[in-house]
Length: 111
Length: 114
Image (cartoon, rainbow over all chains, first blue to last red; front, side):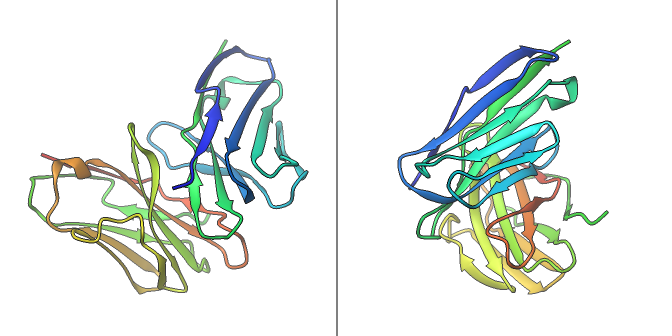
């Protein structure tokens, strides 16, 4: 089936730094979602994107629906310790048939 | 604060036993999803319901897994018989009508099959 790739797999950053991560697919998607998961919890929806080129913010988080419709990006500005977790992208393919999650980007924030 | 609830939170059982996991979706949501999460496979979609009707269960091993929604406030995922390879965290998620796959996850059921 279709798969999503996320990069980087993991990252260690200093508190206060900005973070960028991305999610790519070999085929076109018409919905992109970004989730954050903390230990022992279920993923929490951060941002949903529905149109190519769409740029949506949620506090310090900003996500973009790539213009090619094969990728999406998530940026976190001025990171804080509570940003620690695994960030998952998820997408619905162009036919509305397949919904998949990426493998995640593990973020660690150093004080 | 509306949340998806799942029971039990933890389950340890022996191989061959039946396991039933329950989920109460957020009131008013009309879509329900079941996922399995493991370190090796990540988050895998097992089944998807809309208005209590199963729309997609292609990700679910049909020989031992079954998912149902007896009513709008209860979704169940059953494994019979359970096997050690079923050990994972099982998440239920629900979504409101009219949104394309926006989902709100429960806390999960951690299943260990020995």
